Image (tube, rainbow, N blue to C red; front, top):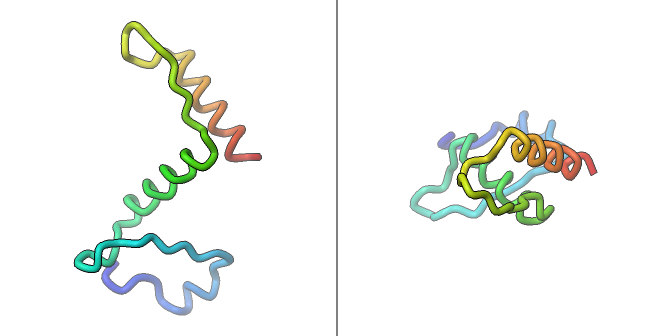
Length: 76
């Protein structure tokens, strides 16, 4: 993670994404990078829908709705 991908790996990529970081911490853990990309995608695709709930916890139906909606938007 200190040096990133090797040139041999980069040439196999069809797209390259760069995440701006603080100069003191120039690299990100892969899981953190994926989380950043997923967060930006949800904002761009307007995937997250908030519903009012008395309990504050998602029901089984809420979870199914979320994942179905997410899958549909990612496939489009």
